Length: 345
Length: 285
Image (cartoon, rainbow over all chains, first blue to last red; front, side, top):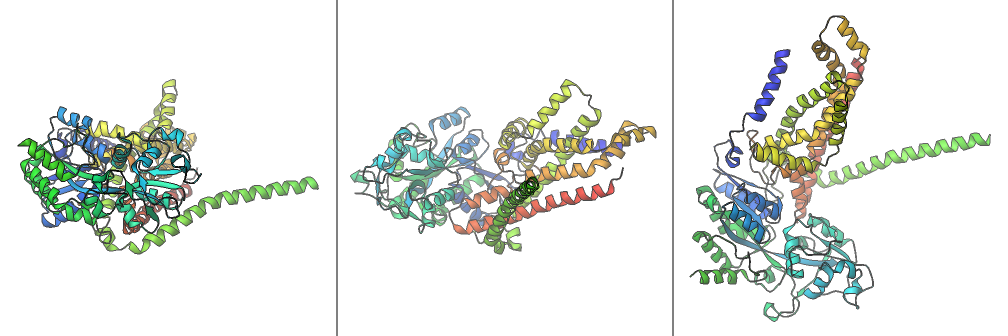
């Protein structure tokens, strides 16, 4: 009996300490013979990465591809510690994330892979709104609104004197970062007293059940719940992005007229990882098929021209971000990519 | 006479309230079960258990999720049981009553109330990064083992407390050593309570998502774990991922996966009740 007891403890001690030497996490995580490609980051982008990984597995089963959903910020934290090969992101990398990567000697290749529209929606029974301007949205959502805007009539006197109920994603979400930057002018600057959920289906339910609600979330969630919600066309009062209020559809998101709430989705590839054959082959496949698969899981494919430019960027191995230190939010992706090419020459 | 009537009235009111209180829980559970059953039951088939995750909801399955959950539960139990029961034994049978041991006691009880995400952060720093175990099943299960350890320790102690001292004295009187007394008398006599505690602790662990996400459980894992160093996903993460997808078909998958997870929890809790009853019948002193 005693031997058994001691043996049991010894096994446990061995199991918990004996494997320290297998240090390097990427290798340790996989004892099988197959190499592994680790993807982590935005839960918005996850369905695209998952779809690409799923199809790639059918074509080439010699590599294990895993996708995590730590969120865009959480994903970059891991990316900056060399723990992942590819980071999914629903907004561009930030200055501080970029600095962390630089400090850790991590070069990355930034690849836009699709567009997502953010839909601003209200209840079906909302009769007073048929469109909304960016200014009105800012009035509702800016941090100061928390004390000033309590009722619909506080935004526009013609609207009902009823309490306004706002719904949006939580502060850890890239959707929140993007919306606040596009509408309030500064990322993460928003009123705090709205109903927040990381699960867009909860927002759908909330707005569908409340006549005086307004909220924002990914276009795909509106498309699936058209019968329950009313989407608002958005007017940014800039002629060059199309006249008047624009309704978000795959078409208006793709041609860049639905502004400023079309956002690009990205993958960031670790430059060192990209030298590995399996990663290179996978990203090639990603760029060749990502557009089609993105549309299948509810996002909007990049225009062909932008897609070609992204492929060139990947082949050239251009590192660094198009966004860090520049105010490029809302610019057309193909223009952005082209301008970089011309300055590089 | 009047006094008598008032008493019966009070009695009936209290009875009514107690019945109401019980039925609130029962009705909520029933509504939940019926709703989930209607949504997801038709989705459960052999394919659902053997298919890999997929972007097409009709093809997606939970193979890697339930395999991950099974790996995690077994390894968690391997760590939590010997250490938790050992600690409980020490505190009850060996430790002298001192300020130090009562401090320890309070701390262990407090640990049971620490939010699970805190354990996740601890696991991330200690197991994933400091010990370099990576984002593996081993890191995940060690973290969960820490999470449920206080529950195991507390329930072990409670179970041991119920063993009458006369039993120990009888054992010593027959010339048994401390070790023999603990191993052959105290442990078997309290085994029912200890096992109930362990199973209830494990049923808490099975539903945990937050600490596992922090230590690196993934969302899309297209392979069944082959060792404790493998990457993994678990059922609650798969459920959450499906529930937050835009297509309604994934909600059905989520409901079906919830049924699977709940059945496992029911089975575990049921066996806890069974074990407790069986042991209580066997123990005679």
